[in-house]
Image (tube, rainbow, N blue to C red; front, side, top):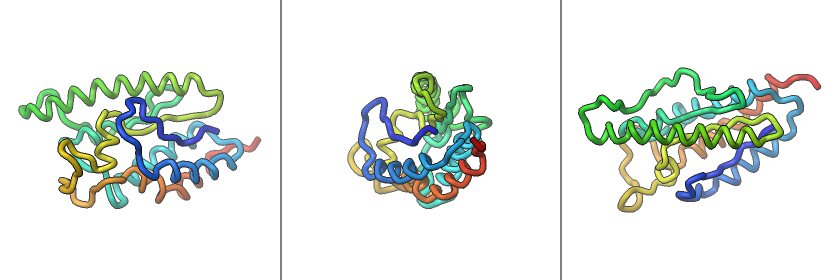
Length: 183
């Protein structure tokens, strides 16, 4: 059975405290025997849903971060129909055009990286997260000129992903167990 891990391929910034949350979840996931790919995909989807309903929720400025969520398995892109499309390259706003380009390019890079990770795994594994290169900075509340103190989406804030993983861990384990095969 695969495990959750934080692996910043770009080495932008460390997610403080995230490893402790992940270690606790992994300890429980490893106890599940007969886990399935469908269970892991559904569990990753649950974590994403928690980033949209729990507090803090995913921050939004142009929508690129929110739209960059992905799930990848040995079958390929498992993200399905994404609710949030993000900024469009046809936008009149130069900022949104730039974010649309970044979103498209970084998604392609992350999918290639995820394919490598999944291809090397000898176990059932899914890779999930945000593909925009600045996701870790926003997660940690680090802005271009220092700390982010003004969040544009009501209820959003730093550490939204870490808190979503932590608060949904029981539900995630239940999903994985529900989808487990008897071995």
